[in-house]
Image (cartoon, rainbow, N blue to C red; front, side, top):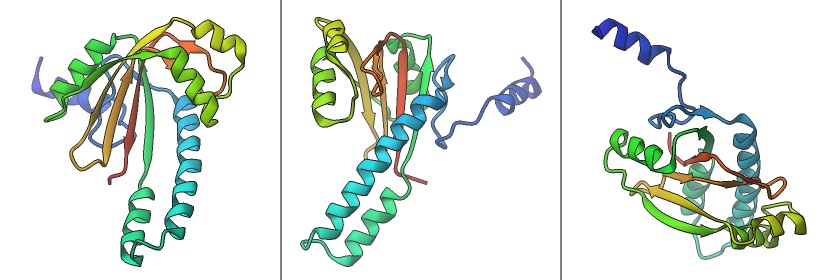
Length: 176
């Protein structure tokens, strides 16, 4: 491949909504889930700011700095047909010093916790369908805490509690 062709392919690729974080291999942005998670994060941010305003142990300068960081919050949700292992391997190659930690998840317990906290709207039928199901996740946080990538092989839809069998990448950024 010529250098010109390689450059053309790179420039033709869609830009990631979070600078410096590439799309997962074979992936695309999921605008519906990006909006769902962005809306939820906005509500959580408003609550956190209210608690911060009421916190008398923090200085005005410290509160202003925290609010500034929260104001930079960006979320993107990608989906890909690639496996969780392929997706994580790609990110570990592309992002310097990224090393993901894997975990096994009990999807029924995650669903129940989400319902209890109000983050997931689901009924008893969704909980019954989740019984005995597990999923894998992999998470990496940048050292400064301003960037997190969470890769899951199954996603619990927060609107319904349905378990979706596809690799999902949730990127959360508090940086520029």
